[in-house]
Image (tube, rainbow, N blue to C red):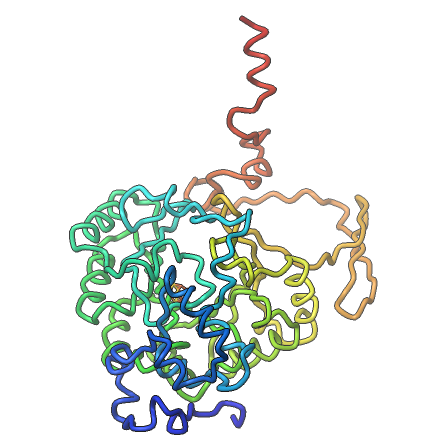
Length: 424
Ligand code: SF4
């Protein structure tokens, strides 16, 4: 695979004297993350005006770039897609009228520290606030990059107790910050406790380490992780330039241990808001055995408005993927609903029209075709699962389709209040 190359660093003044032993040691990488403007000047060229902007920005937000990721940045080109994700800009200080601190209302849906329980059968368990690198587009910057702390032992136990007390939770997503910032021992302690809960079927770990610090994916780590199957890792590549020999090997180490790796990209202005970049990213991910999972519309978090694109741009990207490349390379494009409504999939329209007899569809080439609906369109299911409640919907439109509910309406609907007043 010629397109996937090793990262070179010896030509960068800041890393000239670094030995390969140090470079490949994730703890060395952590200790030597680029935090200061002086260090950054020894990695990339900065104009006087950029230095001034950085000084202002660093008064409010912190910078941390792993040496590995810093070596991926273009030394000259300020708009390099990797550099834009790592180096602060003045835009971060410009508050947008639509910005929220917590656009996904994760704190509102948090019954105990660290846990967000929004969807019926799964829970997010944020075990740390720390990351190896502070991504400039981070949606959780209200907590990540401001105060560095792992969740306390007492709070971790509270989270475990909450999951234990909720038998409907079958899927736990360890997140943060980056859960792989925990030592193997700390992480194993959490995994062990989760595995002792009979109703927890799967565990997912959300980590950007394969992208920003692939050295963290050591043999010791995967040997420990594979004891807690079924276990999945979701990572976060945004650009094909982030796919290197090192990140490929990190992902392969996980996959070889039976841990499927999925990718969640964020659609970012000037970074990857181009159908061709996205196509190359998705295809290259498959080459390193990572399955494209989501493209997220950028959230409306404070300080990242400059990264936002239109939803239409995401739809255009999906139009350029479906049919034009392998189905396996197709992620779902989602908008995480502001206010906490969860992920809403959006994409191009493929149904052009319909009657009760026919549906008119179009394909990626623009071919218009007709699907004739069967005569007897009513289907009945007699399966065992339909007799019980376990696999049925808890709420939503699916409940309406079942006929178990006829109306969904917002709480405190004004019309209802008016009726009450009249009745008095
Ligand atoms: S790794 Fe994830 S949580 Fe950490 S700063 Fe980057 S986007 Fe935010």
